Image (cartoon, rainbow, N blue to C red; front, side, top):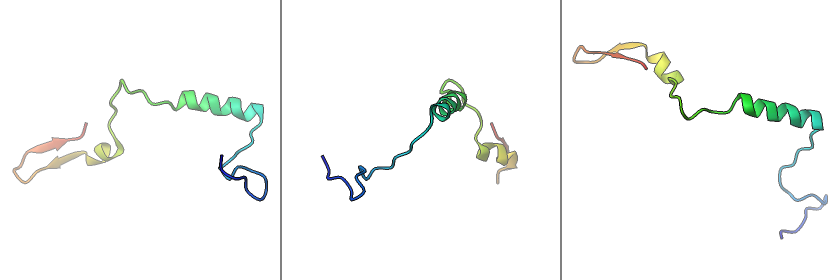
Length: 62
């Protein structure tokens, strides 16, 4: 076990949250969870739009 810091804490990042804040964070975790079953276009792909290659062929983003 590492020695405690001079203030008596572990030295690791620590946050104290109220029960209400913990509930809010748990709800946010559910809302923002990734779904690996889908493959949405990335921001880079959306920004590509239609581009023409040197050979004249058009490339479309996702």
